[in-house]
Length: 343
Ligand code: NAD
Ligand code: TYD
Image (cartoon, rainbow, N blue to C red):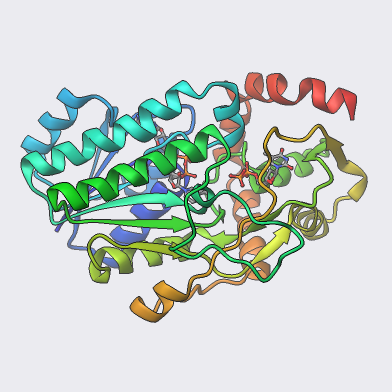
């Protein structure tokens, strides 16, 4: 089995590469990544010498390059993690989200049609469903919930999902789609909430919390996302969407306070800053379908997962300190400079 994993130098793709190489030592893994600001070869260092692993630098939206790659490598399956993934960046500059997330998905699927594929899997997000009201904790996203995206990021992911479903219906391309809730764990880029809070709290820096911190996210330990995709690839039904989530809802403020408590840092570091425009209120997944059909259940509770994640950031300072000292510094100052000054 030869699997092309795109976006494998990023957070979830990187974890998936490690997961698959561990679980299926005879599989061949090709990892394709453009190495944008979010791609990091240090994430793949432990597997670079594995004879079953090959890294290729390239862009999923570059048709000529992708066709050449497929013609040479003829993968059996594609798992597409490659994306621009940060909502705040999509609000600043939506164009690249359309190019990578929509056009890139189309190019990959065209290559699958041209050269043949056993399965194309699209890694999508619960954000395509929009948000749920805070005062209705009884509501959850199911696979039947209408698509209703809020940010340029989620709109680009929703567009890609529609394209994947159209390729199934029109060309009978053997596709599956997974829509997962917020992930956390090792190798998470420190622009996202959990690693941002851990790394800044460790340096006793101010912790920006948008609005009142009441927004709710449904957190899943990244390894549980990997095990779900693994099941969908091997046992999922073609043309189907599977929601992935473990009922771990927390307000942002609860998450920040939990991290501070674990680290023994004071809550006085918290700063309430100007809210994100269009900020989704609550995400919450109903995972009944993947549980009933494929027997998937998450293995890690939020309490265990956050401890493991904090330990990973304490044990792997070099990984994130390289990031913090690079281009990311300019991004942070541009995005947060005024907001923190005004808080
Ligand atoms: P990430 O930003 O950490 O990683 C994305 C990777 O894609 C990076 O390595 C980047 O270099 C690469 N990439 C970007 N543009 C590319 C291009 N044009 N060609 C090839 N590679 C390119 O993102 P992540 O958090 O690991 O998310 C991975 C996928 O999972 C995304 O599709 C995202 O929408 C989805 N997802 C993420 C979450 C989450 O909580 N992070 C939850 C649900 C779904
Ligand atoms: P994020 O990690 O960007 O994921 P997403 O927007 O895809 O859910 O943000 C998680 C939540 O944390 C979201 O409600 C926005 C909030 N947030 C902050 O309050 N402060 C921050 O500095 C960041 C990055 C996010």
